[in-house]
Image (cartoon, rainbow, N blue to C red; front, side, top):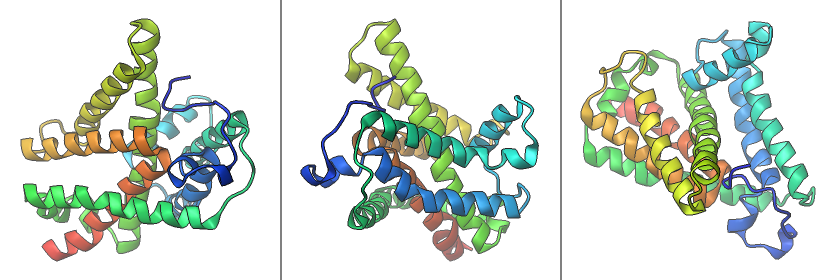
Length: 252
């Protein structure tokens, strides 16, 4: 298993700092569970109208095993919960959660979204682009659902899974250091993250917008490596919620 997901047994939550406890899988699971349930129920109730590409790829993967399409909608959330649950089992941490840690994780995620919002504002034009994107025609509820889905499943694909795969190849196949594996993983995931947003119509995004997505990918990758999947996913979701609702409304 690649280093970004460590299965080493850790001490009790009471003996660890917030920065360590907030990276534990049980806390990440409890923190993200409301977001997962919100998106999955919204997706099921709207009959795939708000399904993002990353989630669609996960569903299509499971449908290869003859899973009915409607039931397959739930498998994206189940995949995240299963990974975090098994991770918790392997670490051997206690089955206790302090609510204040979850509160701090929420506040940290919103705070971490602010640099991305400021960076987009400095580049300019991104707010207007958000207002004219297909998401702009959705209702406020659907915009929030899409934003949360993007935060969860794009981070699952591009950070948790992709960085782990690249790290494994770099360290185990090419015998490079752990730092090299993580660095290359973050860079590769950022590049693919930017190109992903240019699909299915390649070349539809401006160079400035691609640059923004590349830098955002680097930022989220570093956040994932240093602060964990929970903070990275919630930061991504918080940014998207603000960008697709409040800022897009102001630009229209």
